[in-house]
Length: 113
Image 1: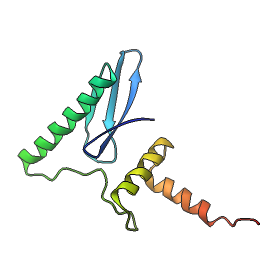
Image 2 (image 1 turned 135 degrees about the horizontal axis):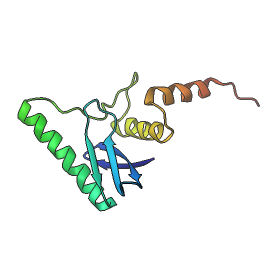
Image 3 (image 1 turned 90 degrees about the vertical axis):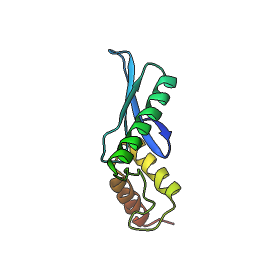
Image 4 (image 1 turned 120 degrees about the vertical axis):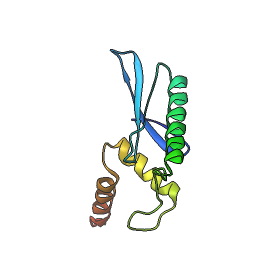
């Protein structure tokens, strides 16, 4: 999985060979933020611009922008650990909840000496 980060927001992107363009979406929030570009540099700039437009829009509307990570997930974690877990789950193609559930299930399997 290909991920770019800007201001704590993570953007997943793919290359569309037919259109000869990279396109992506911001992960881990309910609001929809998309971006695209013909090169990685353009893609990075487009991600930054899309997030800035989103933040400006929220400010104009008096709405708090969604944050991609809260730092809690049924236990208290640092935001960095929360982010790393979410990235790992996304790389594995799973939701954070499913990834953590799988990890906890594995931790409960008895170790044989």
